[in-house]
Amino acid sequence: MSKGGDESIASGPALSSLRPANVLEIQAREYLKEKEIEFGLPIMAERKGPVREGDVDLTTNIYPLIFQSNIRVCRYDVKVSGTKRNGRIVEFTKKFKDDFTKTERRFRTRDVLVTFMNKHKDMAKAAGCIYNDLQSIMYSLTPMSPQNHIQFSFNPSELHNAKEFERFKLDSITLEFNPTNPFQLSLEQIQGQRDLVYANRDLAQFLDIATSQDVFFREGEHVHFSTSNSYMYSPEMFGFKSDDTISFEDNLTYLGIGCDKAIHNVQGGKPGSGGLQSVVVQPKKTPFHADDLLVNKVDAMLSSMQRASFDAKVAYLDKYLKGFARESASQKEISINGQPTSVATYFNQKYGVSLSRMDLPLVISSTTDKDGKKQQNYYPIEVLQVCDNQRVKTNQLTSQMTQLAIRKCAVPPAILRAQMEKVAKSLHLWDSDYLNAARIQVLNKPLELRANELNHPELQTGDGSVYPMKDTAGWRMNKVLSPQALVGKQYGWASFVFWTKNSGHGCLTQNEMDDFLRRYQQQANFRGIRLENPERKEIVTLNKLVFLIQL
Image 1 (cartoon, one colour):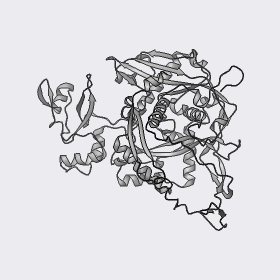
Image 2: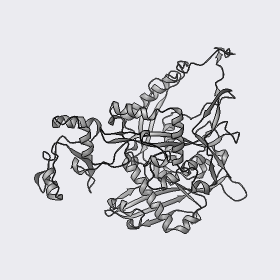
Image 3: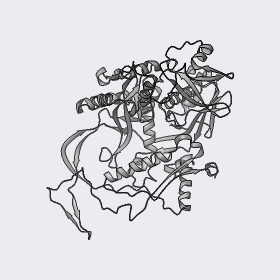
Image 4: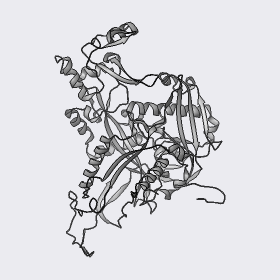
């Protein structure tokens, strides 16, 4: 669409060229069409009419956003990659599953962007202000010149925090920007849209990234996993006390304090009849592994099993940590120059390290050699360190630890409100140069609202007649009744997962897909919708992405 003469302003689906996700959706539709399967549309239910105002005042965790004016921005697809001496490529802006790799690559992406802004100050200044999600998306308030594909190459030694890049053994680092057309972000773009295919998320995405910039670029304050999820390294800096968290000496873990942040359109808020754009801040506490020697962690876990056998110790450790061998450093033999050599002897001869903990198993690391063949490496526990920024999985906590963590999370409303305000303060929502540059103000106090009451139930008969119930009628929220044949008998349903060969381990396995469908049916049943088993379920590999992108 266009406004104001020749000036082109892109909005919604037209603002960007075909990206892999869009191409994947196009080809998925074509596949289903060939199979004569109707593509389901994600249409939301109509919003209910006015409701009755109750007599309860609520304090929320919603901070309204005030805009001085509409925001004109430029969007860029960003890629950061490194080239090793052997020619292999290290991706920094792709998505990763494990916490350590995810957070480290985000930190290193930040370092590359800081280097760019320091070395190309004129270009960065001309952009007005830069907003980056430390993965693949960047916004600027004014276009960077030239308005086409931009690429920069850096020597690893000149990067910000250069020492952190040494372990990658890179020859060079490449930063790429692919711009889209400039477009306008207006307050109307976040209004309710029943058809989610056409729902516009541009403004919400920009606000989510903009409200995260201080978290991302104030080094040493937060570890962040996305624009919405971050944790404080030093909660006491923002008013938290030692009794707000807890450390578990049984396995050297601790309860980290952070938040879940989201951008929402609050209906009925003021100003604006269509809704109020707001940042929602929710305190979050999650167990983390302490940054310590692995042998210290294992000793803590085995403190009650000093007299247990080697096999019993390994079996116990396997419940909470994965990757252990069934042999110790003195038992496991590897081939060195064709000669069988124990791991203990190898470490002594190769590194001059005399191992002493022969009562502990080895750790197995699976890698690929230069020819692409898989191989296993064996490391003694006593030479390894637990990497920082790793969240504890549920199965790594004992029942007692889970109970203690729940007690620290289930706090009275007054304390929860105070913690919410401290977490919001840690995001620097009120002293952000990034928000000031976009002329966005966050109100100091969370939104206070009058609670609404649901309208009384209505009775609908088989002939379509509707009868209002008496004022004494009420809702029973613990039981939802719906007609049996909503879905399942009148209509069949199917489940398809589409992925590309180059998407790596991000695809669902068949077992994961079956588990997801089982949970999906379970959740539907909780809401009164009884789903039969799907008539078809497939995992489909698509191979024509390159062809489609060139169209």
